Image 1: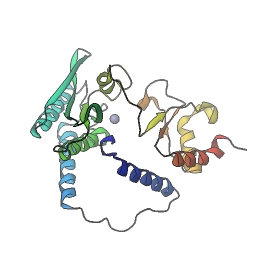
Image 2 (image 1 turned 180 degrees about the horizontal axis):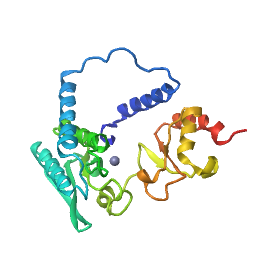
Image 3 (image 1 turned 135 degrees about the vertical axis):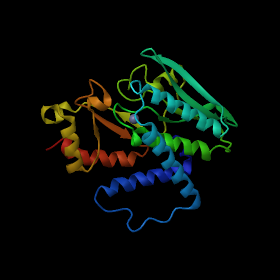
Image 4 (image 1 turned 30 degrees about the vertical axis):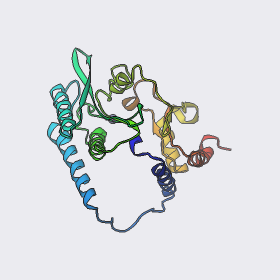
Length: 265
Ligand SMILES: [Zn+2]
C-alpha cells in the first residue's frame, strides 16, 4: 500500500519483487520454520483475523442485492474508525434507487496537508460470496494501518477510505465507489504500480487470452492476468493485464522472458 512506501521501504519492496521473480525459477527464497511473531505482530494478526471473521463470516455477502448486509458493513466501518477517535466522513450517492456510501477518515498532514495519500480497500463483495480475500482482507489491513498510524504526524495527509461498489456490475462504471470518490480530484502521477491492458488476440489461437497467459506462465515463468469479462467487464476478452512495478530492471527481465513466446523465431 502506498502509505507504507516511504523511500527506504520502497527500495526494500523492490528487492522483494526481485526475489519473487527469481523465485519463479523454483528456487525457494525462504525455507524452514517461520520465525515467531513479535508481540506487536501477534496483536496485528489477531485483529486481522477478527475483522475478516466478522465481515466474511458473520455478515457475509454484501452488495446491492445483499443490501442490509452492505449497510451493516458501512455502519461497522464507521463505528470502527470512530472507536479510534477519527472523524468519519461519508460520501453518499444513489445507485438503483439505493443509497450507498464511501467511508473515509484521515490524518491531517503537518506540512503539505493538501497532498493526500489515499489508502483504500473496498467493502462490497461479488454476488454470492463472503469476500474473505477480496476485499475483506484489504479492509482488515486498512483498519490496522489506521490504528497503527493513529498518532503519527505525517507531512502529507493520509486518507483511509473504504470504497463501496467496486465489484461488478459497478466495476469501471460511474457508480464504482473509487471513481465516484475521485471526481474532481487533481491526481498526481503514480509512483508505484501502473497497469496496461494490451490486446493479445493475434498472439494466441482463437484470441484466447487465458491460454496465452497459461503459455507465458509455463514457458516464460511470467504471470499475467487474462482479461476475462467476469473480472474486467465486457470487451476485456483477448486482453491481458500487466502490472508495472517501479523497477525497470524487473520489467526488462519479464519482457525478455516473454520475448520467445511473443516473437517466436
Ligand atoms: Zn475486489
